[in-house]
Amino acid sequence: MFGRFAINDPVMNLIHASTPRKLRADKWLKFYSDQQSDETLVLIGQKWSRPETFRVFQVNIVKKVVNKRANLYRLQPRRTFDGFDQEAGDALYRTINADVILKRASRLTKLMKTCMLQVGWNGSRAALSILTPSILDVIASDPENPERVVVTHRAARDADTTYSDWTARSFFKRDYRGVPMPVEGNSGSVNPYGVVPFVPLFDRYPDDAFWLPGGDDLIEAQEAVNVALSNLWRAVEMQAHGQPWATGISSADAIRVGPERTITLPEGGTFGFAAPNAPIEDILSAIEFLMRQTAASNDLTADVFDLDRSSESGAAKHVEQIDLKEARLDDIALWRTYEARLWELLKVVVNTHAPGTIPADARMSCDFAELQENVSETERLTNARTRIELGAWSAVDLLRSENPDGFATREAAMAELLRRKDESAALLHPL
Image 1 (tube, rainbow, N blue to C red):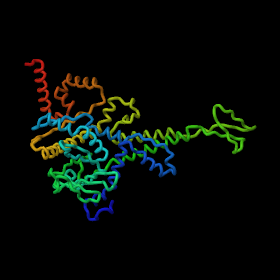
Image 2 (cartoon, rainbow, N blue to C red; image 1 turned 90 degrees about the vertical axis):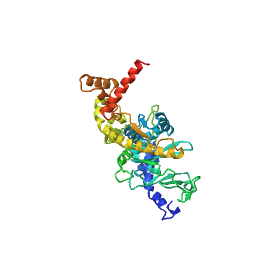
Image 3 (cartoon, one colour; image 1 turned 60 degrees about the vertical axis):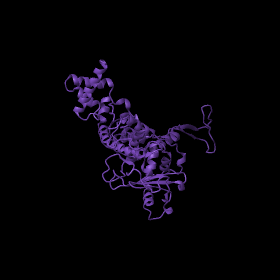
Image 4 (tube, one colour; image 1 turned 135 degrees about the vertical axis):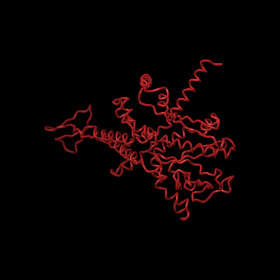
């Protein structure tokens, strides 16, 4: 594509320069989406002349690890609106399919470390979409406040590819050469929102880099597992059966072997099967070791891949998940900020197309559901009851333990308990 646009075109130069990053993102998306066979055959082809003769298998540890780590939206969060009708706010988030999209966005961000949300308008309602590094180009001196975002809209033919070029003041739709195209109703190429309608998403605080590095170890582990699985099946096919041998006969004589056949040998001739030295157990052990270490390096327990699920008690799993819980607290801090930025952007987009729909000073707070411990409900309630009976806890401590994100202070938990008490009294003695 480089030869199709002017060298001094800054937009197309930006797009061309990011090609390696986009190809890398495409590969990672394929790995997450169970499309790994082609890459595995390329790796096998580096060692073998006919990689197509291998049976290719995959156990998708990338998707398993990513989905396990990205657990904030496993249960729907609770959003509370201040200055805006609660039912109208809930309806708005249902309209944009927020919980489903944000759940996938959290997973893709965990995979690729940097993604974006785009808020748009679909005729009569707001729309929310996820953008990955494979179709994004960004200029941002401050990673959390990009100055320019260019989105690639791919097509089957290169000539049909288009680009959306956004800044806070302008919007251009460009063709595959970077030439601006007419946009119906926007002859001045103006951005009607006055802000770049995107929310950057990062797997960790970005410091001074928009495109965060990381995650290569997971992809490399997946490639190693895929090649090992192919080698394992190759060993099964080639060495699972004994190799027949015979002495006392000429090499031209063919011996047909089968349980229903009689083998006639000359005097002094012998026949047998040589047992192959197939390293099947060694390959299996290597695969299991790699998968265990991949789980451990991502703060997950070994049983995430069902490698030894029955051997770990609930208490042991609880201890091993301490790192995962700590990482989750970091994610909550990040995604609470992203939820707030998404709300502010939603207000801008909705009020631009439907003025006065959402009050400018309306606020939204997001309470993420708590991560459930690997103990039974009976054990959890028994532990809480024992603490209360011993005086170590009160009902306030129990409520904060159940939902620490929703009740950050003892005062907030106490107020909620009093509200529930009044509610229960009203139900017992209705007017």
